[in-house]
Image 1 (cartoon, rainbow, N blue to C red):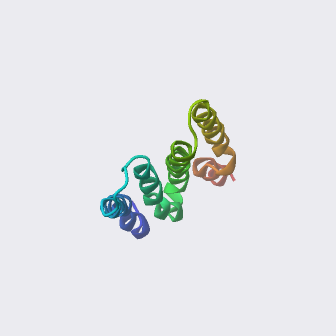
Image 2: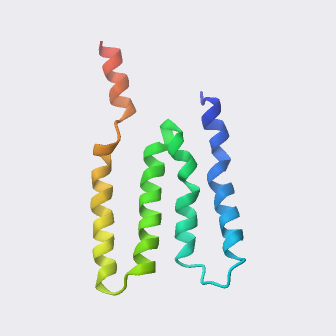
Length: 109
């Protein structure tokens, strides 16, 4: 059963995303690539929910990374930026401990 913190976090991402899109509409700018940044920022609260931290980190990495690539780079540099993001994505399992492996260790002990 989900704890209270997880239940409270269910509406955070879509709520923050919709508020961010509304704020973007106030400005006379193209919505792309800014929508990528808004979507990435919307995942920040999930970093503080232990079961969702890894997924939130991956989402933020890709969305904010793609925003930076499309905003600042052009041409062949976009491909290089995507390769860098992919490499960072592959390194993520080394940054986060799997909860399942910790549970197995406790059961065997």
